[in-house]
Image (cartoon, rainbow, N blue to C red; front, side, top):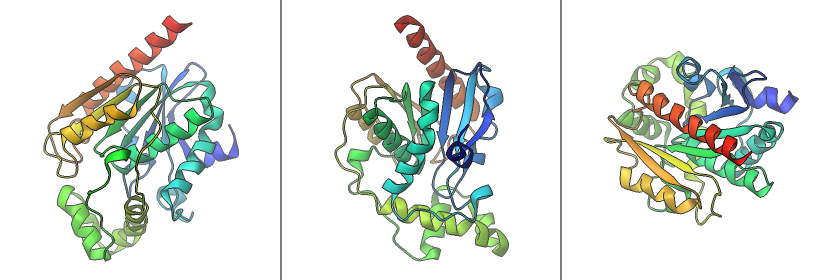
Length: 255
């Protein structure tokens, strides 16, 4: 394990038997702990890892890059040692964009992930016209609460607000400052996930991820809003277990 690996990756389950590893990318303002409950519900021979973004949780004091591209470059470098394994990426919201960009960086280096799973985010080439929140803290908070009512309690608590808001603010600026645009096609399959009541992205917008891969694409729409993955965690992880099984099956067939 390298020092960069230790800094950027939290391992919820990982050992020598885990040749396939699920690498998870959290949404704006969140961190690796978003995925702390996942390992018990996924196959025991799959590593469950999460990217540790700077500026939150146990990296609270680390500066957040001013550009999403710089964050992506840092993560791609941190994952370099892991590319000898089969990697499957899962990213939600901002994390979907970050995961996709990291996948492209690794593909350019000749070591693409085995699959990309994207959730709750317009595809990178179709970001034009999305709402952007280059606003005040109160406007940012109002936007977060509009699709995640549970966060209202956090922002109403002065102590918690002071801890959480800087990362949310910085991530919003990262996302809003990222224009997206045309991208090279991925060689791996892409799996899309969406909530049927998500006010941030529609299932039809999610289906446009199919335009960013030479491989297969399919989408699963689950009940709920932007954070459908909390109440629908069991259904989401059951489907991801199938994705991981497909990845391992393809690897066996190719060997």
